[in-house]
Structures are given as C-alpha cells and as structure tokens.
Amino acid sequence: MPSLATPETAAAPVSDAVLIRRIGERQAEALQELYRRHAPNLLALGKRILGAVEDAEEVLQEVFLRVWQEPLRYNPERSSVSTWLVLIMRSRAIDRLRNRRVVERAHGAAYQEAGDSYTSPEGVENVLDRQREGRVRSELLGLPAEQRQALEMAFFEGLTQSEISEKTGIPLGTVKTRTLLAMKKLRKNLRQEIRELL
Amino acid sequence: MTTETDSMAPDSADPEDQAILEALDALASGDVSAAGSADEALRRLYVEVLGLLPASLEPVAPSDRVWQRLAAGIQLPALAGESPSEAPVPHAQIVPIPPAPAVTSIAPPTAARSTTVPFAPASGSRAAMRRHSRWPLALAATLAFALAGLSLYLLRNLDEQSDQVATLYVRLAAAERKVADAHQAQGKLSEMEKKYSLVTDPEVSINRLSPAGEQVQPGARGILFVAADHSHWVLAVEGLQPTPAGQGYQLWFMGESTAVSGGTFSARPGEVVKLSSESMPAETKAIMITLEPATGSPLPSGPKVLATVG
Image (cartoon, rainbow over all chains, first blue to last red; front, side, top):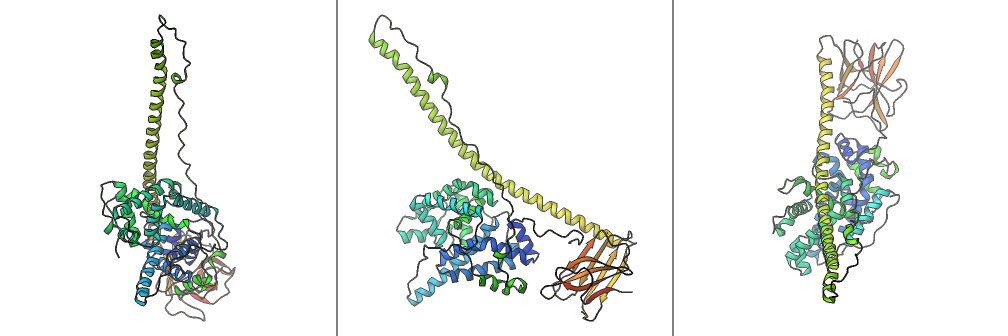
C-alpha cells in the first residue's frame, strides 16, 4: 500500500526484473521502459528470422502485449528478463515462419531467405549493450564454421537437429556433437556476459 | 511442435550435455519454466547462452507505429503518442565482476637454471665424460616435461574452477533474489499488521466518505480510519471512475480554513484504492477527494468527488 507521505522516486535506476514487477502492478511506464531497452534487439532477431521488418514488428507488438497481459509468467529462477523476451520473440517468429512456409508451399511460392543486411537503429547509444553485441558477435564468428552453422540453423531458422541433418546431409550424430561443442564454447567464452544477465 | 530432444536424445550421461539439451528444449518450446532433470544452475547458464545469441545482430529501431499500436491495444491513450525512446530511464548499473586472475607463468625451479659445474674427467675416459655430460640435459628435459604437464593440469583445473564459480554464481543470484523477496514480503506483512491493528483498535474513529459535488459518482464510496493518536490513518476507496487522461484524484485534509494535500492517485474499475500515512495535519476536520491535474494542485480547484459525511 503506497504511503502518500513517501512517494516512490520515479528517476531511480531500475532493473528489468523490477520493471516486470511494476508491469504486474499495471504501471504502463514500466512497459514503455522495457520496450525502449529491448525492442531494438528483439526486432533484429525477428528480422533475422522472418526477413521482413514489417512482419517482425507485428511479432514484436505481440510479444510486448503478452508481457503486459501475463507478466507473472516470468520466472526469475529460470532466466533473465532479456532471455525470456528473446525466447518468446524467437518462438513467435519461428511459428510465423512455419505458417508462412506452409502457405508458400501451398501456393508454390519460393521462400525468401532472411537477408544479411541490417539497419542500425537511431539513438541506440548504450555502450554496454554495444560492447556485449561486439563480444557475442566475435565469439560466434570465432566458432568453427560447421559448429556455427549448426547453432544458427537451430536458433535462427528453428530447425530441429534432424531437420538440420536432412537439410545439410550431415549425419545426425555429427550435428548433435557440433551443437553441443558450440554451446560449450560459447558458455565458456561468454562467462562475463552471462554474469551480467544474472 | 517438435522439440530438440526428439532428435537429440542424450547419448551420454554427461550432466553438461543434459543441461544443454534441456536448454535447447526451452528454445524449442519458448518456455523456460518447465522443470528438468539436469542441474538447474548449469541449465540456466545454457539458457542464458541462447538468450545472448541475438546480441550478435545489429539492433533494428522499431518504427513509432509499433508502440502506438501497442499502447492503443492495451488502452494506454496517454502513452500512445510518446515514443519510448524519448523518455529514457537509466538502466540499473551493472557492476562487472572482475575476471579470475590469469595464471602467471610459473618460474622454473632454480635447479633447472643452475650453472653447470665443470666436471673433471676421471682417468681421461671420453665415453664416461659424454655419459656424465648428458645427465644435466636429461634432467632439464624431464623438468621441462614436468613443468609443461603441471601447467596443463593447472589450466584444466582453472577451467573447472571457473565452471564451478559460474554455477555457484547462478545459485547465489537465486538465493539473493529469495532473500530480497522474503524481505519485501516481511515489509508488506509488517505494514499490513500495522493497518490491521489500526482498523481493529477499539478507539479508532471511523468516517464514511460519500459522493459529493456536482459530478456525482453514485457508486463511489470510502471509509477513513483514524487512530486514537489522531495521526495514523488508513483510507479505502472504491467505485471511483477511471480518471480522464492527464487528470488524477487528489486527497485533501480540510481544516477550518485550510486544505492540505495528501497526494494524488488513480483508480481502476473494480479495484479498491488503499492509502495510508503516519501523519495527518493536526487541524483536520474533514477530508475530501477532488479531480485535479495528474501532477496535483496546490489547492482544491477541480470538482469534488467524495467527502466525509457530517
């Protein structure tokens, strides 16, 4: 119960987890702040999966609508807020991609792969975030090409290990081994970044 | 939806592999809440690895219409026109944990660097001389191999310890969250106990608030509890209509000829607004609630909504 004599200071720095709690208390400003912090990275993920920014923006809107409607689904024991958002965004984008593939297959249309060129957002100047992006990118690029391919196909294309094996013609066991190795290397080399998320 | 484990049934009992598989399961289902059999902390670390992958992409700024549609969809007209990028709130400061100290090179034992003492050949035998002169070399080579082995062992050990530190860190973070939650719950409980003891005190004075003024809200009502010390109070209000954009309800303590603001608040349908404080202006004779600008007003200026009866 808020005491009128001691109003909460609006300018105090807040963590993502606190923003989620405030969203649970129906504070729209908290949703706005969470959106400001994470929307550019989530949109980049959506664009990487779906190709078209317009589609990715629709998914982004759905994700934040879900966050507003069901903030209590977030469990701090299981993941950081940013990872939770990434998993929701990815899951919804992959669902949309699969639906689109079904529709395109039905119409005999060719599926257009996601492009590799990205637009930098205006006004994104968070140095910490930029450093993290640089390190993650560098670690991903530092993986042996075949390991990176296995991981990227699983993460960005939503393919199962069997599907990757079928698509690439590589034995299933090899695909699994490559994915496991890639994950272990990333975990080892991104220790600092992971700690920052906890 | 096919999950990763459909095709990635664990071939080994390696707990790390198991943790990765379960993290990939979470990836496939988009839900990290399902419990698994792998070590929780290890699994969490791999979930976070997956969560970091999009950071390898260049961020893309969403167009303003995304937020506008979102704000309209959740009925936030006041925020619909306000792009989130215009009003940044600082991030919580992240204090990076210093990396574990790197293993410094181990100085070779002095024996390996000791100068060779000139050896006097016995009875001039050259073969014996050669045999003797090989000993220091053999010793040095053995020591070098031993050092290399020791370094490898230490590096491996360091890796394992780093892993342990990482998993312990996850557990520590979880424990800290639980402690913080417990403190918060304790604070709330203590506050509730105070209010409970106030409203159940036989000497508490109870005042009803009823609709008043020209813009009557028939369903609105409230009840004010004032402690015997005439200072602590609790107010519960319900049935108020949601305020128009840019406006808020403001509480007033009315004296003979004074009005002291008790702060502003908003109302949502079906919710009981509860307010409390440990101080009330001494000269208070009545209280009322008016509709004012959301930022508050120095004196009552808007329409009266609720007021104490009598």
